[in-house]
Image 1: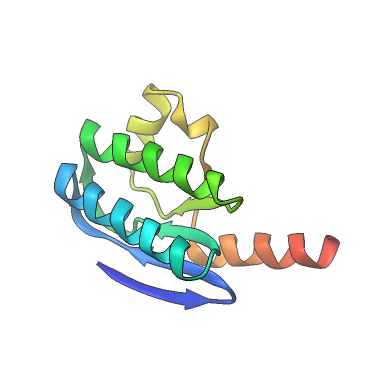
Image 2 (image 1 turned 120 degrees about the horizontal axis):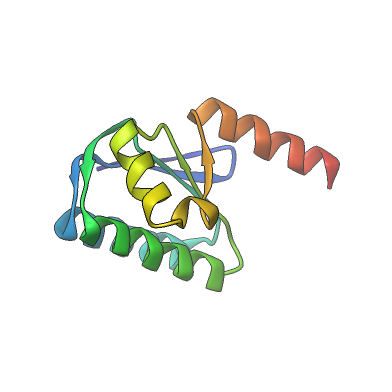
Length: 115
């Protein structure tokens, strides 16, 4: 999984299957990042092919940890399968989802200039 910082935002780029193993890696990475330097986090799913229920559970757990730290967790670039999983479980209502990393950056930039 690739990771980086863009405009004071951690960007995680998981690949392949988002399952128990991948989800555990993402959750551990998020906890580590929050301990280092709390920032908002974007999980860019453009290279995720499939997410199972364990992957979804990991995302929800990660969301709780990020919110406990007083930060935001964003998702972007969801394929139709990931979007369907979130919609069927109604978790699309608790995540802030963007069509692309660029759209997320624009939102954050606008939010900071409004605040």
